[in-house]
Image (cartoon, rainbow, N blue to C red; front, top):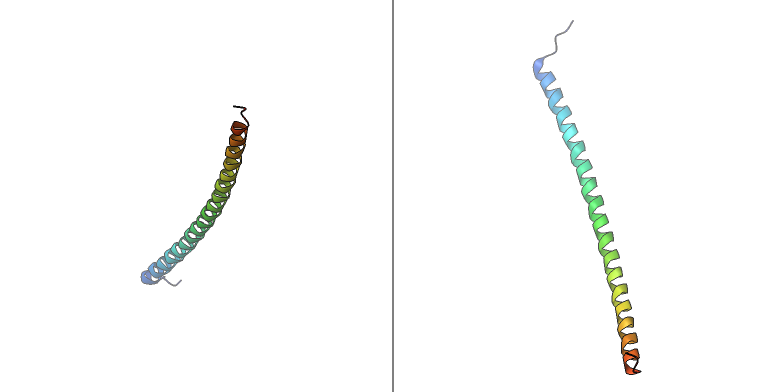
Length: 73
């Protein structure tokens, strides 16, 4: 029965730990990229909503001005 050289066993453990760190780093990067994409999507949606609300308020202002001009306060 051959004895395993402790230095080789230590190197194997170090390599396994480095592989786990690399995998964890890759997963973290994927999560950050997904979060960034979601943030961009939310910012675009927010801007669309702001524009829609601005247009609706403009229409309301126009209607209010029209009613006031007609004397129907």
